[in-house]
Image (cartoon, rainbow, N blue to C red; front, side, top):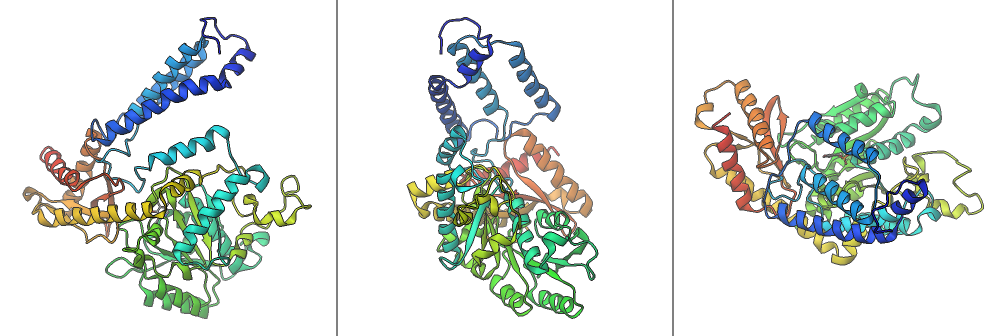
Length: 503
Ligand SMILES: Cc1ncc(COP(=O)(O)O)c(C=O)c1O
């Protein structure tokens, strides 16, 4: 591209500049430098974890850049580089810094940065997959990754199948749609209207909201979700499950599936999958396991006992963008019986699927995935796995689970904090209870937790979330940056004390 200062006023000049590989080379170098500097800055704990600003102000700023783009005419490579630099800096300085060791919030990781580099190959060359020939390599790497994780879960090689889709919510919806079609026979073509008795979905009482949402989307109806009560440790009560299924079968109520959790979102409790699968088998019910968060425990020799029995489920969901530390989104769906993949959607699309190559259906992602054009979402996972082996994922799981135990110990040692329970994974739930709060009403204590969290989050010093258990408010942290240390967690307690004295 020209280095002169002549405006690029003609459409052909704009297009040539936007597609100029030389410009990509220059801007790309700049981008990598800025990104590496950013990671190094936030990774060393400098600056805020969350760059808090009011939504309206952020939207005004974002809109102003678009309007500046409309108003200006790019001139030279240098002016584009300067504009690129400015936009990148702004983006990096206004977001949520997941790689900051004080990020102990939602179940979204400080992703392995190298995965982002592999992902940029996908994005820059726009690798997609609906049918094999649209993305042969994208399809191949997805296959290979699904095979490796499925085998680590204990599924039988050659007998199970799976796919990757955009997020745990869509993955759960996909698997439950498959279950619905298998359980109801003609559900796909006839729909659910007029069925009597109406079908139900039986789910862990604290299933992620996307499970009830799936029931709504699939026409089962959110009121048709039967919640299985939990034991004291908030795992599904297997005896209660048994009674519920026996009662439903006696009354002839069609059961779409049992949806168990490994682990459930609120406190990270893992359901007893072996016992649950035995109950489901006895009542001839599809077992689905939402292992969006905890599924990666299968890669850890130390923690895989938490997910024993995954291999007995009919379908399993596991998010690589949670405990495999991949950038969003990369969610895997597994079917113990690989043929079930084709029960999800019973459609033909002559403009897409080629009848002269019927064997290709095995590899055509669009046959089994709600998405048609689908990003090659496994590129980062495949690249990082190929460089470091599964040992890296084991190390990430072990390190963050261990750090959560250390955090629990710190909470137990402190007189002014109370842990809800000992964590089973890397999710820790707790409250700050300074002396002056002890005689206050439960409602005041709840309000204090929420106000305290808001103050800390807006300060940018730490990022944590809140939850509500049995009607009471708690603070909640997921230790999901492997570089968060015990000292950072000790600092979190001090930070809560500091803001607590002003709340
Ligand atoms: C157990 C469980 N299932 C599903 C989801 C939803 O996953 P996603 O945010 O990728 O849609 C979550 C998110 O935290 C979760 O914890």
